[in-house]
Image 1 (cartoon, rainbow over the protein chains, first blue to last red):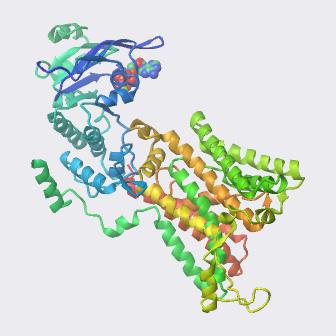
Image 2 (cartoon, each protein chain N blue to C red; image 1 turned 120 degrees about the horizontal axis):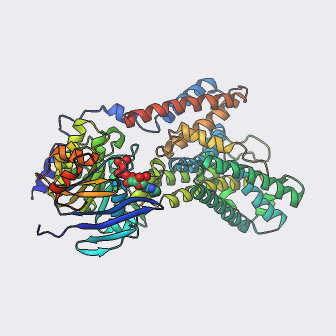
Image 3 (cartoon, rainbow over the protein chains, first blue to last red; image 1 turned 30 degrees about the vertical axis):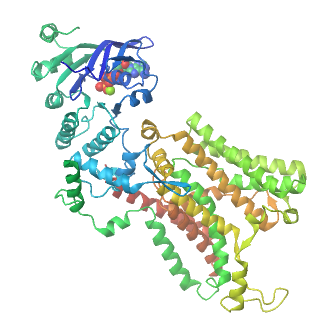
Length: 260
Length: 379
Ligand SMILES: Nc1ncnc2c1ncn2[C@@H]1O[C@H](COP(=O)(O)OP(=O)(O)OP(=O)(O)O)[C@@H](O)[C@H]1O
Ligand SMILES: [Mg+2]
């Protein structure tokens, strides 16, 4: 492809003491693509995205952002480069309003004399508008996040990340706790965000969810990648087998043409 | 631009989506932290209007009586409220009241410091202890309940020890004399609007003494600074919590500290500052009390930490943090003051006040849990 990847991780290894959580994983994210990262429990998905978002420092390997090599010292570094992560359960505070959640940590301020106040008027208007763009119609911006469905909460978190300048959006199992309808809402949100040119890393162990929106698929198995496949090059069944690391493994490797 | 058009559409027909359930204005007005406290306050006033209406409870003097008590509760309740919303408790408030009082009296009376320096020193020490409480809670990750329970004992013990070691008694008098002519002391022990009350007395709006040395003076001769402090704390706390960025951080720190940290909220700083605020409130309480009584006693402030927490809970705050209201806490304090003094006016055995506290605490927690369920849809 002509585009330079937004972010590129090459041969990432991560050791926790004697545990080798990642043994050489590579992945790149292009603008406007949804890159699905699949794998069974304990495969190393969370460890990998934590490396990508600056939480862990890789034991070995290189990270490039816009083609330039970088080292993330903290999640802040990654955030400043536009790499945002939406964690499944640590994103929203249910008792707080949508607006308060949306702006948490970056509250817009207005000054009155020597004092500075939370500018609720601006905050509410922007929140309503951003939510509406994501297809969520709020009753009012001071509605508590707790009244939203799980899928809608994910969407608020995604909208927040995008509004604050995410170029790479990492979603850690956003659909794992959701029902069918809510899942389709989140998948629709992913599609919307992708169309704005943001690159998405979508972590899941549900192959059907991945097939619904994915442009490329990378499967992790016990800390190794079995290669990256493009949409149309691989079937649901094949992906499923790869995740399980089944008998057809050797056969599949040839069809992927990636490194094992 | 399409964005502009869309925005216009939205403004023209807000919420006209068929999926948006209409919620009645009434229910929206009801789902708020202060609901229980508002109803409670109204109920309490109605009750005492009947039970003690003819006892002078609602004369100028009577109002001042329960007003002062309510203001005392309110001062510590505001600190406890913001701290609880930030997700922590401070059980050392009562001990801190005793401690600060003794510090002021010891320094000014025993060591002969100027009153202003003694007061400032008490505040400095209190803020440091508050910060230490917070620091220990943050670094050990222990529940603040345990950490401040330790402070409760340590502070109370030190207060009695210092008092006895230096003066061989647990009550130190002579503070009023030491405060004579001081510039800072009136900020805690003085009264304001004296002229207005004299005028009201002369105009016959409020009663005046019929005889004695104070003949002709109004029975209420001004608003004590204690009440001014209480009002200032309530206004400050309410605005801070609901109208500022820091207020959002308080909610976020108590609602989910990890989620707040993830988006860059300085949770540790928020919590430590709130511990310092409760210590500050306790010291304001102590200073006002010392100035009023003219003495400090090592056992002052006993059980105040629990009364503060109860007022806050009556005010609708959740014990688990992240939700509550300063106005609610202030109403909780008002209910306290009115009932405590009202029982006295109504001639009811005053020990029943504790029974009342226990019952109303239970009711408040049940109501809060219910309101919480309404908000979160219990998912
Ligand atoms: N901080 C850590 N210290 C030691 N070992 C760790 C640490 N974090 C992860 N591991 C190990 O690394 C391996 C990969 O874990 P990881 O959480 O990345 O898996 P995952 O693919 O996200 O699984 P799941 O689907 O269950 O979320 C596991 O064997 C895990 O025990
Ligand atoms: Mg995981």
